[in-house]
Image 1 (cartoon, helix red, strand yellow):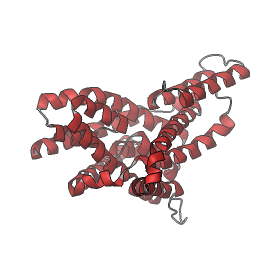
Image 2 (cartoon, one colour; image 1 turned 180 degrees about the vertical axis):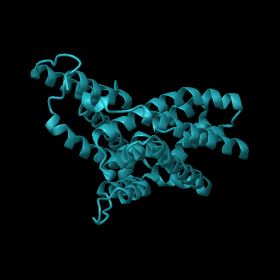
Image 3 (cartoon, rainbow, N blue to C red; image 1 turned 90 degrees about the horizontal axis):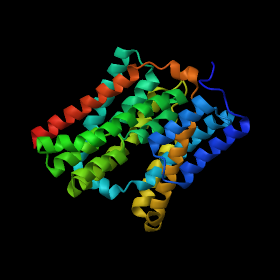
Length: 316
């Protein structure tokens, strides 16, 4: 498959690649969406000079980043949400995954891509996709498409949720619950809730942590659903370490003091893995993508947004 433009020299390819890596690691200039986009620019337009290695590196870096993010979960805060918070997140998770499965069959979307889009919508966007992808052995193209869908809808939610909340007269508590359930990524949840008010931010952040913990059972179920033939089910090591990280950060003060640094490094690792995933995508693979997964993601997000809003508004 021909490139869109003539490839630069190998030296220039390597220089540009290393420059993007430096931007990710040493500056705050690139967020998740931009890191993935930068990777796609390298992969599709400039050429990935390290393609023989970046696939394996991105796979393991993704898992390490997920473990590091576990240090950002305070189990005491999760406990504050109580049974109601657990019920909200469990019901929304089950409904989203079920509808996602049905939409995947309706649109004839590949099962692993369907599962990634549903997982990202059900729990916490890019983090959930990063955790589930290794468990179901998703390829770079599937991961990239799922992340792209989630990032687009995150950006939309960040801008439209606060005005809708104001229009409907949602209380701080109602908006905080709605944002935590219906917005994919934690950063977008925080951004939307911050615009609405301090109490909304506190509730949204706490409930979002509860939602994030469902990553653990989701990964285990995902491993079971996509296990190969008669092979024994094995629990992914990185998800056990994710749980251990949250326990250590919550109950050991010495660990809690360094947890913010670990989480910061984990976020950098996640950005770098997204860049590498994008850099591994070829033009041929991109042309094979249909618009159906995007519409599947939109319908799924609209469903969870409207349904959760109706329940919260009705109970209020």
